[in-house]
Image 1 (tube, rainbow, N blue to C red):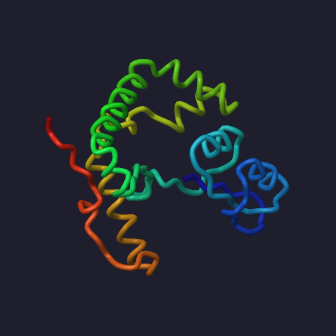
Image 2 (spheres, one colour; image 1 turned 135 degrees about the vertical axis):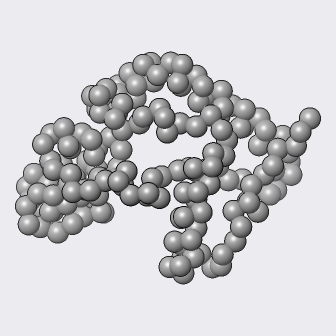
Length: 166
């Protein structure tokens, strides 16, 4: 997430990304918290960067896939198959990175150099559950618990489906 400052208006986090640039240019907002693609694009357009989540440990994002216990009971081999697909996809993405960047740029209409800055392939793990991702999730969980946004603390490992060896 990058923040940009222009004018003397308020800081916005609720504007759609499609409205952000115009609002900054008009001075309707003094700053806008943005994410990948738009942040580097605005920087390339001359907007000053106030701060970046990349400069603060633990503020990077991660994602995960969750499934209900009833789904997993019906599809017990899903985690193993899904993780194998994710691993192969990550390997393919890295092996064909220029095609990926070209496709992403074409789809989002951002210049390819902005896409490469926004989505460095070093952040794509070939592991289904990388240690760095678990660390980020643990930090998010601690925050949610400390703010009363999660009912109680829990062990992340209780949510992990261990693949059954064949």
